[in-house]
Length: 261
Image (cartoon, rainbow, N blue to C red):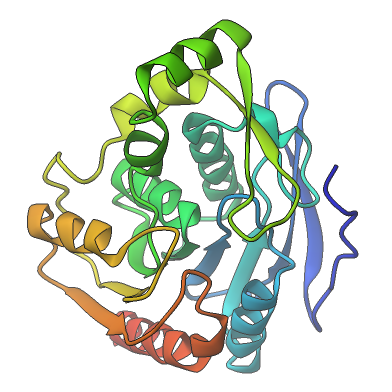
């Protein structure tokens, strides 16, 4: 079982709770200036919105009087659900629910790892609302690349058992996932489908990332049509990039400045 999370409420933030049709609750924190763009931070797989990176980036935004929202998708952090039921479609549904809770204002999405994939899917579905994106070590297509490519006997065993345990990449507790995540992810290929976006999109990725290799981002860039894309390769950067938050915040500042013109 994951350790309980002691949430941090930053100055000016208000807690919020949204309900899915299933009754499951989505929980997060919102610092709202009442006008202008709203930044939305979406964490990665097995992370949450009270992590070191999420909090430091939120503090940076709040210090500059930017409206900022951070929340946990189901199965993570303070929100309802279990990790083993994680699907890309459920994360996307949670993000769209958050979109619908915000009055008509420009949205600037800030994703980390799996949160980048879900943020991009959200942006493609709400192009009229999303004005920019900051993506940190994007885990685009990680289900197709890391899970669907398991040996056939392993996949058949997983399908027969419904759930299968996986080792933690950082030597923590193992976790389980349901086999349905493979079929669920198939419609959400963003690497080979020629993504088109005409908004500022900044991507940072460490060239020493052991979880999602930087080649994955390079492959995405080759296929995508994003004229306002900025890509920074972080020398010796790992997957979490917590040592490079100042660089990340610099990119965030540039996006906000461009949108505020």
